[in-house]
Image 1 (cartoon, rainbow, N blue to C red):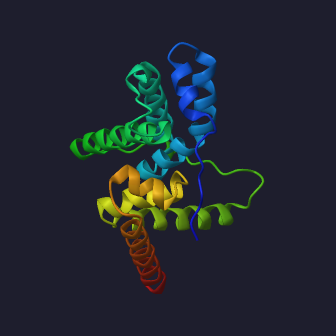
Image 2: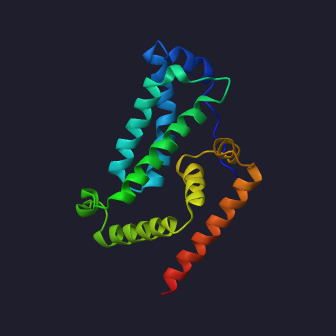
Image 3: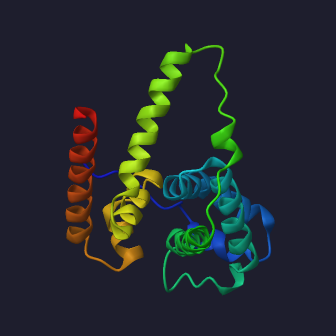
Length: 188
């Protein structure tokens, strides 16, 4: 089942107004922030990095709004191109240096949920993230756009310059790989 993500009504006109009026950019920000944040969080798997990179994406979008051309692509596609580039830059930088985040070191249990449930949830989450990390780069990108950013197959195809059918096949195969990988790990 495809998740339909519609563009913001009047998005092109808002982007034009955003060149000179901050309230127009604020409307675009409010609409796209959760989608961009989820995409970045899905790709980078760390909350602290997702916060930082998402802020950079919107900062770049605001400073470069003058270069946005609504005739070439919708604002959302332009914004996700900025997000994709920011994520790629970060992943390249991480390949050069590895370190452990403070978030990883300072997990704190909530008083509302029993500690064993928290641990089981974290373990499942970590296994899923590890399995996602074993997918190919293109599969990870498409999974992040689909499930992290909530983009439709059509929007993903337009962003990545693929056909909708190709996107659907890659998604299907990636989900199947994840299922097999996670089932294999559970069997151990």
